[in-house]
Amino acid sequence: MLFIDGIQLITGLRRNMKNQLMSMFDKITGRKRSVIETVNDELKNICQIEHSRHRSFGNFLSNLISGILAYSFLPKKPRIKYETINTFGQLALY
Image 1 (cartoon, rainbow, N blue to C red):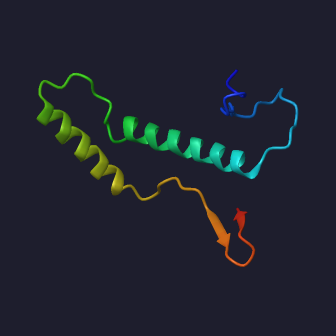
Image 2 (image 1 turned 180 degrees about the vertical axis):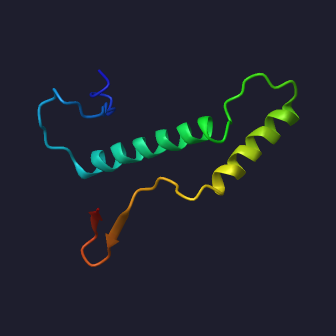
């Protein structure tokens, strides 16, 4: 029913799955998902943003901003390398 409405479910690859041809958009989206999950994990565990017992909204905001600021000073941040080639409109992934 979702496929008829134009919604396609993209899941991660597993060992016991059959090989199927994936479109370039699906590959890039899968890589972005892993990067987003990595960033969320670093914000929660390293920068200590996940704390649900704030007593005021000001304390919540100060904790959130300090965690994002601490993340900005981390030496290595995950990213996706890609290059667009303007001559043919192609996309090169590394």
